[in-house]
Length: 219
Image (cartoon, rainbow, N blue to C red; front, side, top):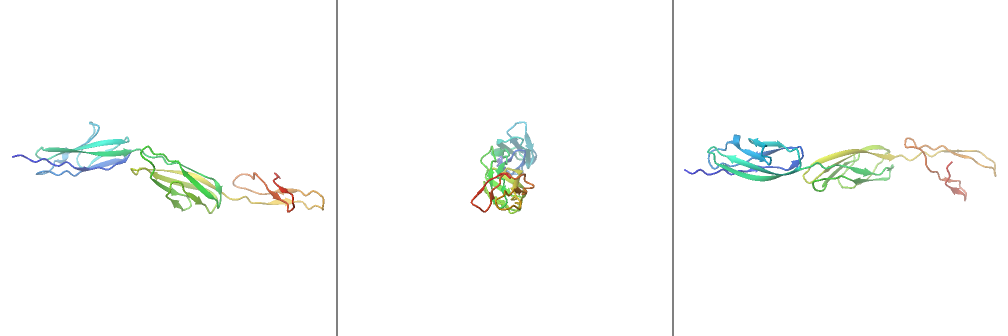
């Protein structure tokens, strides 16, 4: 009597470097049953054989792998099939942002890189409860402060990477000055007492004396 041969089949997913992917044997026996103990997933490297079902393997390197399954039934009849598995490197999330005054528009620029296809997904979290999903968003903060902004990116395989960077939103300085009381025709002294805490010192002054003479002075 001539025995039929099984049909070797299995499912495989693409993944990210260092992921452990499980290959599920879905082979169909011609008669009887498959001996799952000797079904073999050949993971390109002939020294790496994963026995049983499912066959799980941690991929240490990115690349395109040809996975072969040999299905053997209880009568010793065998069939094999090959699938392709793509293992992607991890992208690198990176961005730049303006430092602006409160109420002004902060512009974010995505600088992320991917060795495997382009970045296809952006998940921005601005640190004030707001989010966005475009590549280069803009955002207006309603309060001054330092915001920890998080960007999560993904490549075409879905491999994620995230980074968190501080974004500073400045408050406007507190304007204050003192002046002498002087007689008409005498010199009047003006002294700046403005404050820019906690964001450094005042760097420019524009005095307007409510006459035709106004200008920029240092004190």
